Image 1 (cartoon, rainbow, N blue to C red):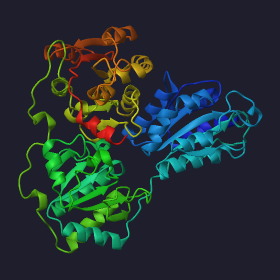
Image 2 (tube, one colour):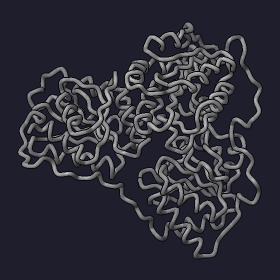
Image 3 (cartoon, rainbow, N blue to C red):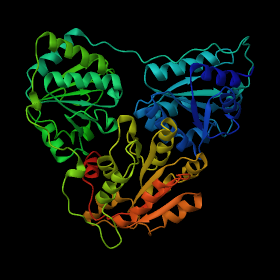
Image 4 (cartoon, rainbow, N blue to C red):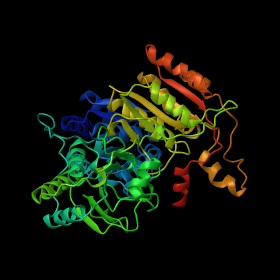
Length: 546
């Protein structure tokens, strides 16, 4: 059979369930082979959107993300999404058509290996027709085992080659990620650190974002009397635990920030304690002992405050430390000696700043949180607005929050919501976007409508690139390049086939109640005209890193 057909069958035999992409001549036969083998194919309207969908699908489902693109512009169009996935260590395979040996003078010719390296992805190449299956399956293994985004170059001449397979590709189930056991000496050192702590805090990040690790870290926290927190991408990981203070960093509530900053020991599991998670280090008290647990040796000590780095799986390490503390007979109240007040942002008093046809984004977010069903998946784009849905919209667990912010690109939020919705069709998908990001990624609105996704799309509309307005405006710089005429986004959405409503005051949210009570047979777009006089403090934090 053709190599393209064999590759499609082999990926299906591995257990690949879903692939995303835009079909061109270079990936036409491969994509059809995937579909013929039983893989669901989701056609996006732009390769950048397809890449983000595959990334979000992998994050939300815990399964391998698969993207298929045409050679040349198909690859370059997808690069921003590939960069986001690579920087997030998302297990994803990019099946990229390539020009092949005869295409040295082709306009489509690219150095795909160099492009992959430039954005932090790993590269493999199907070298010959005879080796193509093994080359692709090696890429799959690397993506899963190493938790990497792998771009696989599939030259056209190789795809068109013949491969002799008597009974079809042999099924090879996707490998499970390895569990890296920590060194016993390092476990003892971490146990010593926690045994001596009186106000410990355990912070879980992307590398601990799964139930086994979460349970182990929660048990360790119980043993040593620690509070639990997460980085933004792991929001919701410890939902239901009364000692969970929610997100550490720029999104932390005042009560959470106060307690994290007062900790005498901070241990990060699968989290590098970057400037976002620590507010540029201000949440690490001057006398606090700081430790980090990670499977990536290069990630250890990324924060110079870390004095103890433990190379090991987050869950396995937490279990080993808890067992050692139990064997020593150590059990402490620690930070749990006093009841913990509410850490919810919605319980923090504020003065409503709405009026003159604009709704306070906090009031908007609280109103939506009250109306939307609890079983939801919230996908958040980047921008001045992004803290409001992140802080005020509750999620059922860490799989209910998809936060594609590693590359800080706006315009990814709508495609993120599509990928997450495909991964969890049992939950209401909620896309939280700024107007700039919405218009940048608007091509995928047609995808949402075509797929019949019952999605709520909330646009925090300030008719501007708000981050730049608030960053440069106070210094007297002209803002003509970042402020735009107000647009009727609801009318635009109706043109795509959405239900839509414009929200200027809380009473206008009645349209959301009506949509929720109806058949939900088409997506709902909410053009929320938000008050924008106030800068967001989380963006002020971000600009300190520029």
